[in-house]
Image (cartoon, rainbow, N blue to C red):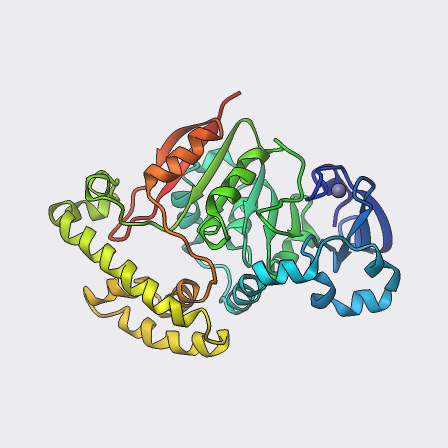
Length: 363
Ligand SMILES: [Zn+2]
């Protein structure tokens, strides 16, 4: 962890700046905090830095027992209730951790997907301080970094260590393991905050959205997309379609019905799948990945990506998370407005709606 990162961090509970107590340093480009504690004087709590990453998840004691064996004093002043956290977020952390540790890695399509889905033009990333809210293994953080941004990548799972190669060689990459519902940052510090396909996996997408909105500087941008709900047909038919999917406009009602049916199938399947041990579920998703190649029927599965490896991952991604909420562009637009943002762009999509909005914060 770079010392400069301390200027952005704050206690997730009370917002007070944190004081470092360094236990071990490592030298990469410069000397960094490899092991240590970040203290909040206000709450009399501390948050550990383990393997160079500040950790703001209360179950860090069970995730990194070696650290607390090495520094038993650290466990005594550690903040937060482990049991409450695990009850609410434990499965999400474990299941997504498994997914992202098994994800193949950076892909050629990542830059295009990232630019399309954030809706922020390529030229606007350079020199900006940005937050990737829910980075997983960091495929989009990697792109933002390549485009010249100073990146803060946050995830609930430890899979963000897959960005370590960049951390060690660049001054523009910071990692933090934390909870988007309680982000460990000072307010209004980011030029761009994006969260791509993440906040619908928290217990309340709306509450998480409100937390992200607070981190954006005045005149800064916030880009969020969430899983789509069919909503009313009157609203559905106003959803923007991608250029290559304009022909769907002629069968809009059938599309709406299919999306509605798909949601019912999904809700029913998920009653069971969220309780299947995640490694078994991962194996079962090979079947869905195969169906994802069959014309039309493929839309009843949860990925129609041309690469089977990605279909496998996206089906698992759909069926495994304990929390999954669906929203309309109207609902998401309201969240932006209530937080003082003007809606700049709405994400066009294919068959299944994917409400995504880029908003700018009022000054
Ligand atoms: Zn505090």
